[in-house]
Length: 262
Image (cartoon, rainbow, N blue to C red; front, side, top):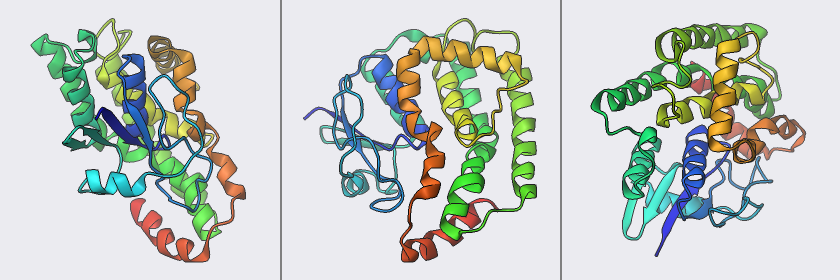
């Protein structure tokens, strides 16, 4: 049995794994998992597609992912009898098993440490704020029927701005990519996260020319067609505002989403 990746491309970590596998021509079976199964996100990628195919709409593999990941979440990997969860662990497993080009996770101990440093910093900074823009502008209004006060978005954007300033000054500096002249896992994990605000109309790259140039280089490094294919769902997420939500689902998920903002 070959490699199976359980992903939902609405998820930033899933997009990083999808892009990494496709960029490096890693053969895998795409197992689509709906984060909001049979409810909100009806138009989703296919249940199974080869690494060379464009994801297509199809049924969900949510149950299969739950069996593979004890945490019952995506991303999840199944390679024969071996299973693995968590984005960073999956990326590192793929890079080692398929011997991907060294620049992704360098053998040089100092460069590798720089990738590790960014990945550690990322979760408490960029990831702590960027996804909240989607909850505030799209998902919470969708589930509650009420928009959140503008002050809430402003609070999140201020936190994100602080993180972006640190990102540029501490990690990017005057380099082409985070650890130098070539793309690494650090850049990939960062860019998919920063596309989340873009998808809901918060263009964080505007008025940040250094950040914009870095984004352009990342797109070119992985291929623009693949980049925008992977981000198609998030860049069209506002279309969800027209979808009818089951009342019981609203009642269940609305308080969960609100809690995520605290």
